[in-house]
Length: 169
Image (cartoon, rainbow, N blue to C red; front, side):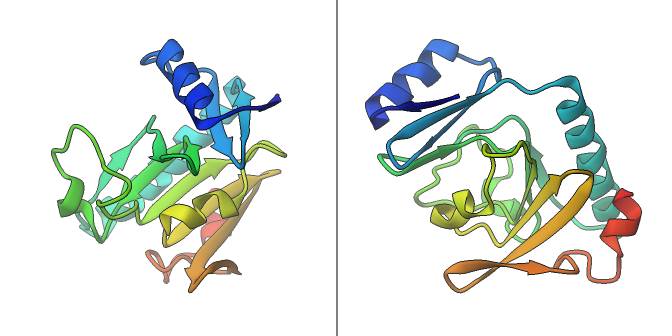
């Protein structure tokens, strides 16, 4: 559901929802988008996040992961990725109760289980997230930030030796 709204209306809606993560709320370009995830969405998100953590554990990499989390840049953007992972910058957020999206580094990798018309890789441009994984129609799409745009890749920069499409399938 799309609704025209101001940043203040978005903030009020988020406060009314409280600590619940449903419905998911996104703010972009003067619009609020609402989505109530279905069980398949949650299963896919959980499964792929477990694959990511298993790969990180297998390579003995330190990381921090968050779900649910709300990323906000006042008056510009508000989005709730399914999972976000701090890999290169895990120490910058480790132990923090809150992340300041204007001063703290962005997550290194964001996972979105895509519902058509809700999620778009460009939603993460204001945050400069280095890598975004979109899982759409049972296919994993890996995007890397290249200067000011996202570019579709065949490999993850964090798992260059892993054929992700095979692992996810």
